[in-house]
Length: 295
Image (cartoon, rainbow, N blue to C red; front, side):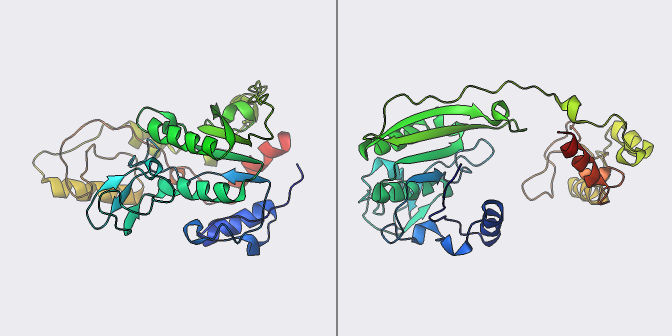
């Protein structure tokens, strides 16, 4: 696809460098922090790609949603429930000192689209934004896009069905300006998989990439704990065990500070890369390189 980047928005230095390296983009096109960028001063563009931070919508996050809290009176509200001209004013007391969750940056995305009126836009986020907990926010988002003169087509898609080796479900919104939309847009059908994971694996793997017998023995050894030992001492032992990289962790449920137990239970052990022989050895990348050459 032939395209020319008009601008991009990334306030993190290293993420911006990565973006430029991947897409061959001039760093000077970065307008930085979107909350401080002036949408009226940037050049016009035809297509807008992006999404807002997903942490507050994700099931892996705190699920704070698109919530703004007034620092003066403590009132919390959804900015999408207010007209865009009044969002920065607390609906209860009128003050403008507002604490905002990261995911509420979707209103900044709307701000640029509202001003620049691109022909098309694509918005992406975690599928949980379409679930019952945040569906009101998502519906308000779609409604606002429609009010700005766009038709919105959305669907939850899994990357694994489109040639990407990752089981990753996300909601995608294809946004088309109404004066250009012929109503025929459809999301592409899934691409049938022709290769399985076994096709990507080496037939013979060097011994150094296997767990040692000692590591295996440590894994299958039942977790031990002594109820006569104080919880803080047990926690210290677990911390030392983790630091040493041993797999046979004492089973425990730690507090947020990681210094106390509030119960015992069986745990599933996770194998870290450092538990493999040869971790850190540059020859390990050869396995990946050989896989790539076989593709």
